[in-house]
Image (cartoon, rainbow, N blue to C red; front, side):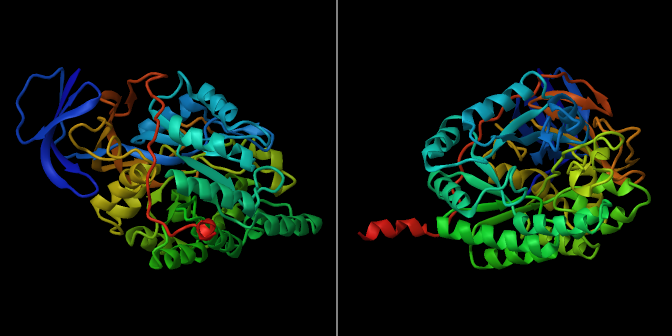
Length: 473
């Protein structure tokens, strides 16, 4: 199959030019001016931006949580992602305590196989990493293409691991060229605050936010960075939500420590006041970390502009309001944590970033695609438009406006966090490895089009591990 895209404005993280692109099979075969050749399909992209497909490095499809399971599976969730211009996700396989990492990976391969509309990779959430399991971790890195691992400082008794486990994992990651992703909050202290609140009859959704202060997130970020520095490992902070935490990232990067971080659209566009909604409506926005005071938003945008924050991911973990969120009707701590967003990320960031003048087009591409590809071992196969790269291409209309609504979105959830918000900028044509899967809002793909991505290791320059004291004997 040969497809010729003509007259588009090609935008990558570093380029901005007008040209034509020839797709042959799954890859980009030729880029040039005024290309004239036979093709099975010719698309005139005049007036459109030709950008790399989005990469959402933080999703939770078909994820068990709090007695229920996230509403989108790999079929509905990846289809929704494609509608929004995302062509790759990196989801999270979860190891149960005592379980083999390989068994956990097999479970998530089973969840995704034959369902995904776009390409996907896995991080591994590790909850049990004694020394004897380090060999498994190394095998996943070097043989299975799972080169990033997520550890939690939150959710005591379920996902939380101690500092020794974090240090052990970081040391192995540093040695093997892998990356540790940290959910950085002081979950032990938060758990105490939650218990105090419940004992005093504070059960409404807003107390989810009020019991998770920004200082608890900043402390977790600071501790994660310190552990990574001692281990001689890079670290990636997931879903950073506030200026207190961002300050710790900025300080580390100013000292040359390879600390990376993502934020999410919800922290750029939504704020604490949503928890004060009437009745139980605030439960729609119960996610972790919670929404913060509005003034944090411009600080996060500055972090994106100045590269203290490298990526924007969604932490897409939807639970339906009319049944799943109701599990916490009388106790905010039982509300399933998470919200929908995988479909809206590209348009939201384009509107809030480019249209509103906070970032330029190149930076838009970088934070929604290229940086994630580089950090997580997918570049240059993904995240750019270049000869030989996968033909994951989005023809994006920078002028078309749309109104976000649960009535029209494709996520399998009964509400939108951005209901009624008008955004400018939409994905009109979406190619996944050369196949046109979205054409002007119509889905042309099928379940199983997506393939599992084995990711490469990435060496980020780090300081020497403190364990190298053993060289002194």
